[in-house]
Image 1: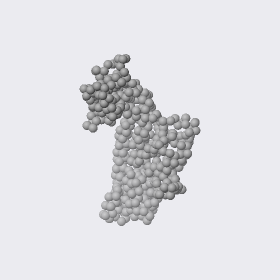
Image 2 (image 1 turned 90 degrees about the vertical axis):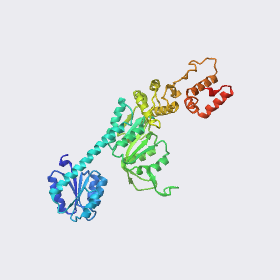
Image 3 (image 1 turned 45 degrees about the horizontal axis):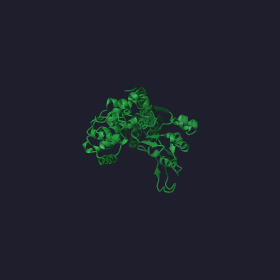
Image 4 (image 1 turned 135 degrees about the horizontal axis):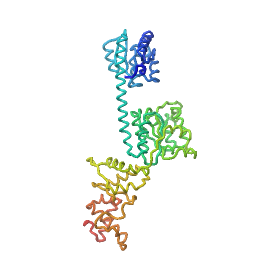
Length: 462
């Protein structure tokens, strides 16, 4: 248990003498004690202070002890509350305990008895905090594993995510398209103290300026034609949570001015309104652009850039961490496991081919390739000929009766027919699976087969 002087106690009582006596006694025992002579003063101090224990009188003129206790539980969930009263009854004691009081002491207060319950209350508070701390550590360890990779740059990024998630500061996330910027943002949110509130991703490139203004800030009733009722904006609805401005480099300069004001003032004004509405949100921003370069071009405000760039996290492109490709492939194979839970694998030559590719679409492109290849391979494992054609994986067909070198006398149509018939044979005539492997739809395949039959080839023999 920590030293008493690190434990903060708030005493609330409208009897000044009782307040002074208890305050003096607990201060002599080494506790840091603050006092309030009524409920309203107590709530003001609870709003701006971090107390471990509240000791409050039950009957007071402006606000009773139950109301003070409810405010305490809302503002400081880990703090315990001891209620004291000169009107003690069994019913009132039971009611107070049922509503969250740690203990209920009748007046006149025996100071030695109060001290015992202060110590017991603090043991419970500190135990709750220790449990919460352990949960956060477990959550952090589990949370950063969502971002797959063991490359040194990725390991450093994971450490930074776990560190900065706990701080309530703005974060700028940079990286090429498909690197996983929203995943990093969600991980920060899930590991942060705000994880019980809303996570709101907003794509800045998907909305016009007028639509974004209305959606972010909301509008008052009758503020424009069609505004038949009050509309609360996204920022207001995300109060207490985390907002991600994805591709913030696409935001117009005039909207940047409005966002800057929100960051500075922590307030919004609805469209058509005059009332300033305080909001409490943590801002994350993501971009594939170099915002510092954009500020020099004049397309991004420098003051907004500095506001957002409190902490910067950069995600390296997949081409710079190809050693992570096997881990990512296995991750996606597990993600797209079959309904019975079985996980298919990938042939060594197919994996080697993936590691030679630069992935301009980064991890998102790799995920799409794995998903598509699984669709093509049916119930078997992924082979090299299941990979997309753009990877340059096959010039020949992996079937025994198709020559590896095409005779120069054959026409293009003959080559196509032999290829399609070979694929049909390899999948035992399953036309749906063959169409996926060839890369055409089933109707197109059916038309080609019909044409082959009309030319005298019995496709069913394959």
